[in-house]
Length: 455
Ligand SMILES: Cc1cc2nc3c(=O)[nH]c(=O)nc-3n(C[C@H](O)[C@H](O)[C@H](O)COP(=O)(O)OP(=O)(O)OC[C@H]3O[C@@H](n4cnc5c(N)ncnc54)[C@H](O)[C@@H]3O)c2cc1C
Image 1 (cartoon, rainbow, N blue to C red):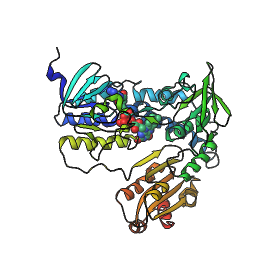
Image 2: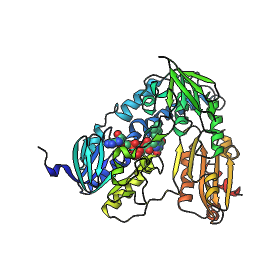
Image 3: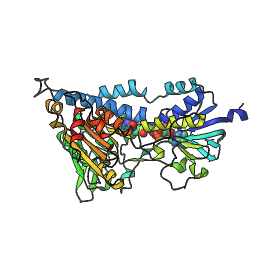
Image 4: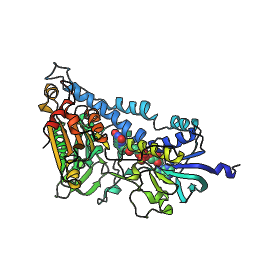
């Protein structure tokens, strides 16, 4: 028989994505009474349908591409034969336990937290309802309910059996052809995987260019790379209508042209729903699309939010970073406030697009005196040796003499980014960066060249 104390906790965490799980486990380890609530799988999107399985798919696709590069560099490996069943098996056995979160639940409860599977809704300050059962949080509530795939209001689309990231990650067999709505990071990554496994892929991007949030030079270089993989990219034209006749999708574009494919993937962004978790009962406007947070990740008194729902960047590293801020704030520990000026992000295409801080356009909007330096990777020694496509671009606040943004596109572009993320975050003076020794012949040596071209 449940007692009142069974329903009273110091902290209740609604949604256990990467950040929520970290908050719940860490606060429980520090001796707080913590209730973690998730209606899906503990760990959220990242381990089951996001980062981890998608990067496993990408690793496999890159291995195929690398094998195909032997011709012209090292001889011949004969025909490379893709087999999706190997990837599907890894996703089931190594990544997701066939979408079973027992290990994650045990990890969380092993730290001392209580776990309830269900839908949590804030009913007012300190009050949470989980599927009809009332709980009280004496110290506060942490919201980490994340996002779901945003399905655009395209005529007919909702009545079709479209795929989101869930279905493509769970696929055991690949279609012969695929239309991908959306040429952002997720759309581009998954398109390239599919193409390298032999699927005929068309990307439809309504914006003027794919990867529209990053530097235009990166978009252009990625377009070339995707087309080299056999992908058709339709950019600057949206989809007006989608239909499905039982076996084939037909997509009518705004210019009147049509596309047909066996499957259709919706990758047009992510959508948070703050009102659905009851954040409107603690002061947030009902129609708010995100849960804005201060530099302690507080939404209001006694309510914190972490992860995609905060609108600070839909990345696991943001969710985990904010979790650290919340843990300190709840415990009253010292620590720096959250800051996002050096937010790093990586699109794991081949070539990879790493980026940190502001793009050139963002910097020109905010700053008076912006300088830019760009080095095509092919002009660096290692880039030339490796026949590598990509670029390094740095964006500087010339008045302060520091970098405010950078893009590192190329093989391991996400790793090369590390150096520039330190430079932006640490506000290292450009003169110090210029006087550094860069190992020869590395890709990151292109940073020195890009700094030399700042103008
Ligand atoms: C295909 C794909 C690839 C990605 N690749 C990367 C990558 O390489 N790197 C990267 O950093 N990020 C990547 N991301 C983004 C990353 O997955 C998310 O940013 C990350 O999961 C953090 O999200 P979150 O913490 O906000 O919560 P989520 O992971 O979205 O988890 C939210 C949890 O809340 C639960 N929930 C929702 N509402 C309720 C409720 N009312 N009650 C109870 N539970 C609820 C859900 O069941 C879920 O478990 C990728 C995403 C996708 C889709």
